[in-house]
Length: 352
Image (cartoon, rainbow, N blue to C red; front, side, top):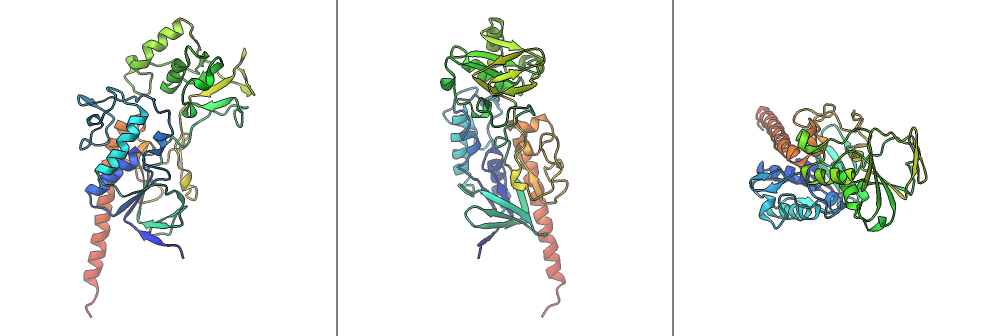
């Protein structure tokens, strides 16, 4: 028979959101477990190691730390913007510092609900059962491609999530598609090694004008503008791709051939593990949630990190780290309410 492990709270995902939830679960004295299919921070370990963060990480302005009780700037990291590799090391240290109950190499294979509790079946054969489920699987597992004919199974097409550096693209003609930070940084990185084209559907929006981190930030934008003005990056805005046929890209009034087509078009929510639930989602696959991150449809099912979409700030780390304590506080309150209910029932039982 399958061994069943009972907990109060199951947290799925050992990335920044899951780790922050674990810190708060420890603080509230919850009986919890974090299930991570890889190792701590696996989604970030799969990213380009030298990728620079959008948010600063120094004492005067810290938008990167998961907790002020264990700030990242106390470690040996680049300032003001650390790299993905340095952040993954921070997450590992964070899990050790707070002695989080995290099970690595433990994938949530199937999740169901029996009316009283959530049941998580793992690939290791164990079942975890708890009245509260917290999902922090993020977005990195679900890179987004626009609905353009010819993208699927095309060997000339890739997502920026897979980009690890310029080496494979030397002396090649590369088309980068996207108007955000990832597109800008990939295009800049390729300069000097490749013939670079950058295509956007809208105008590029700059951090210096908007002060929004998801626009091209100060450390990239001045260099990007210069490369575009010198036509080292060949840039065209307001372009819609009609179709792609192998390495030929067709626009409304023109076409071009490229050795590689890199879509830096972001991510959608990664909630595939909840396939047995009939969740209502928006166009970006984000579920409907309350202000505490609780599912509108399924009580005691909570979402954290980018999945708990409230505003655009929810999508960046310093934003969702602020929301997670409220989520865990709400779970703590509901746990206490449940305990009070059963304590009252025990009082009403006739003595024997």
